[in-house]
Length: 217
Image (cartoon, rainbow, N blue to C red; front, side, top):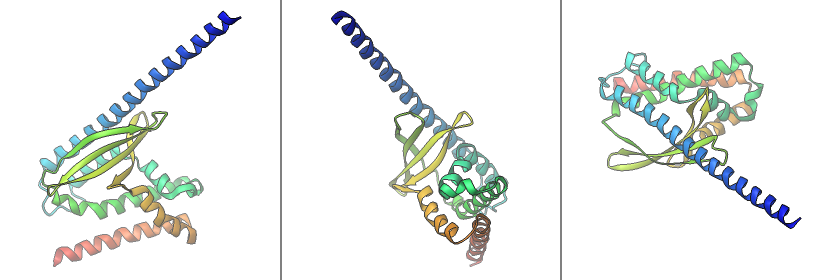
């Protein structure tokens, strides 16, 4: 009886050790694969920036369209939209989800494309990565050198359609998802999904108008 129990205990301990070893290998692979996917995307975006005339770009220019395509290839708008809206995302119809994502992309594009001309060879360096216990999510930590300062930016990633995609970005510890979720929560409390979509569309128009007015000055 004692020998049987000892053998059983030995088997259990060995099994646990093997499981832990496999888990550690899986976590290491997850961190490497996510980091590699992000690095590949950054290299592609940097190549376009370094080989394009970034002065006086229009929002519908070929350069901006190419950058948008490459960004959306690594950035999951499905996950980003779902997480910014929160629990109420389930109440959106399929057509509302599509309209929301389209409106959100246009707002982000209107908000950030004007900064493309400020690119001057800044570099992004991956400095580490950490994963959750299952290895299903990875946070890739990077630093960007801007005006002799190192700005910490973390990219939270998961697997979507068999490839690692970004679902949230933290700039100096501030989450884009949480930032937008706070705004959308209040809008959805007072209105419907269609109201939120319309407000996003209207805000994108205002951002463009403001930028056009600034360019004329």
